[in-house]
Length: 372
Ligand SMILES: C[S@@+](CC[C@H](N)C(=O)[O-])C[C@H]1O[C@@H](n2cnc3c(N)ncnc32)[C@H](O)[C@@H]1O
Image (cartoon, rainbow, N blue to C red; front, top):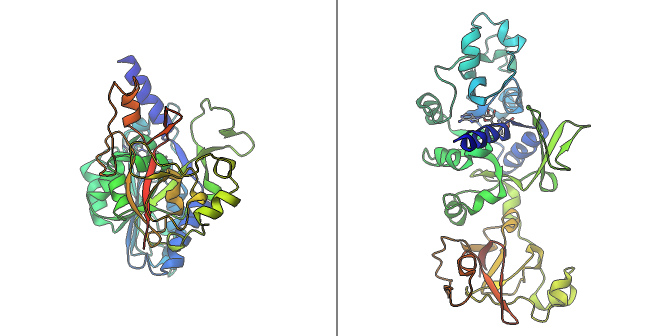
């Protein structure tokens, strides 16, 4: 039990990372470039936010007019539920006529921007109205669900520990969205089918795939994660997931033929392999270890790294499946038993190469085929 609580507290701390303004602006600009009217007349909900800490509300409030929004709603999660030990309400909150010292700790808040309250003829951040929510602002509460149902588009960086639940919460309501998550989430059984069917995809993304966030709680970090000089933590493999169109996903990858890859690839294990692009032992597909080494002229099924998704153009390739434990793929040609190897369970979770009589497990792979 103690362990469970510890894990919960750790998860809660891991959830307190705040997105940089620049990253939000860059992502939204990619959607606007594709369709300048994508947000026009729309109600946007920013749940799991915290306008006193976060740049999402700031960005959308500042750009309310330029984007042509109808209404902006943002909600925050109560400090007590966040398990913040040294909570101090901001001056902004304390000086407000509706300030309530108890609710400040136990309730979430709602911020709404819809009308020109100041009478300056513009709707901007000065016109933001706020109140306490009835509950703690949990996105799963009926109160926040109602706001979800009212919204056209949902945008946020949700709590990392509740990513699956959060995405399900959006998709069950059939909303447009753009949210931040970890690339590995695409292998989840709730997420991958949506990717495969082109119902959701990766967004434009972070600079060089590295995402920097501002943590609000001090904690221990592995080497190279926290930068003292910037006060930011760096996460690799962070992606935007969305069902809003952008241009980059329609740009086909420039690729060489198989023969040219074998001759000129920058990857030594392709140019000097005894058998480049080997066929899996348990799937009817070949192994392609790097996205930039996908052969342009191969018409069969290929297993490619998960990071391929960041370069996936649905007009160029079709996604057939994924190699994973629950795999029910028709492309799987073999199921290992204890007679094959004592590690047969692990082998069945992945694609496998049989090299010099040894079974070699490959990392999770997406199975793709070139569109004809
Ligand atoms: C990764 S942070 C991102 C915050 C903000 N959206 C941003 O990107 O700047 C996730 C936020 O979700 C909040 N949170 C955690 N669990 C929640 C829940 N069940 N319902 C709503 N918010 C939650 C956390 O307190 C935290 O503020």
